[in-house]
Amino acid sequence: MSKIFIFLCFNILALGNLAHVSSAHKLGVYELKKGDFSIKVTNYGARVVSVILPDKNGKLADVVLGYDTIKEYMNDTGHFGAIVGRVANRIGGAQFTLNGTHYKLDANEGTNMLHGGKKGFSQVIWKVIKHEKKGPSPHITLFYHSADGEEGFPGGVLVFVTYTLSEPYKLSVTMKAKALNKATPVNLAQHSYWNLGGHDSGDILSDELQIFASHITPVDKMLIPTGEIVSVKKTPYDFLSPHVIKTPIKELPNGSKGYDINYVLNGYKTKKMKPVAVVYNKKSGRVMKLSSNSPGVQLYTGNYINNVKGKGGYVYQAYAALCLETQGFPDSVNHLNFPSQIVTPGKTYKHYMLHTFSSKKD
Image 1 (cartoon, one colour):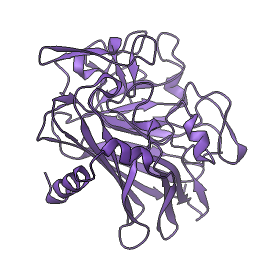
Image 2: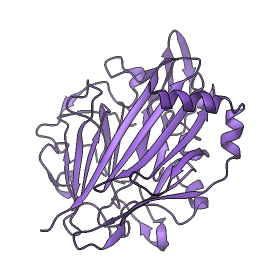
Image 3: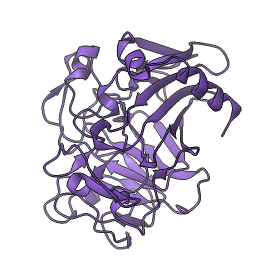
Image 4: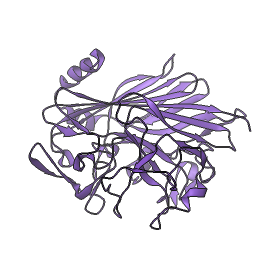
């Protein structure tokens, strides 16, 4: 654990009633800027609300879906741009057993839990503890205290996320969490919806996608993992070689409207940084390369977006963007063969993402 992280934990603990401090903090939107590359973040859900990038001709566009006002984010059900947790993705039956104790969680998707429950980290106010707007590495760090018993989870947890810009056109996301008094599952994910053509440019079906994963964790009809880890070979889930999304999406089984599946990243058993995915939008020339230390990544193609009024009044429809949510495997608390997401007191959860943007001519 870094000395800086320990220092932050002790100083925040010294504030006393952490839940009160977080909830009382004012809402705002904070910008990070490096040349013609900029992002904006709100402390409501620690959300990325815009990412401005040049295309192959130098034209700037916002490449993430979102809204014009914080009030609209409060009514958002798609987790646009948010940090989701305490446990991202789904927990089957909204329950698990840990160290002999059975925990019943807040079910918010039928009988299952999705992205931390009805409240979750995407629907709370985070405290901004550092904001360097410009300079060599503009960055912002946000903090949230998740109380013991919140949404049914055991133990208190201190959570930090830092967004940092660096050259050339790099956005890093650092998520850390410290369990205070009980062992607890922690699986954070950054839930931005990416459209490299611009948030208002239509669908992403013609985007070229590559995912560095030769296996997936298949799911049942409720999108809960079966516990298997299966090969993508000769299936529509195979993105080992780059190709456009619209071709295999038509071949998905069980009448699926699109992708909503966890990929098992190659080398997933190590906690080192590894390549995750590459997205290329031919029209704009924009490229996004993603790497992470996580074992998995959820590919979601915005299948259930339907008439959502977004920024500038533009109306988002299905496939308006894709999400690449690096994460631990869904429902890992109920599958002993999945990498553990349990964090014990004195240990620190660390999740890193690096987005590297570029552009290329035809």
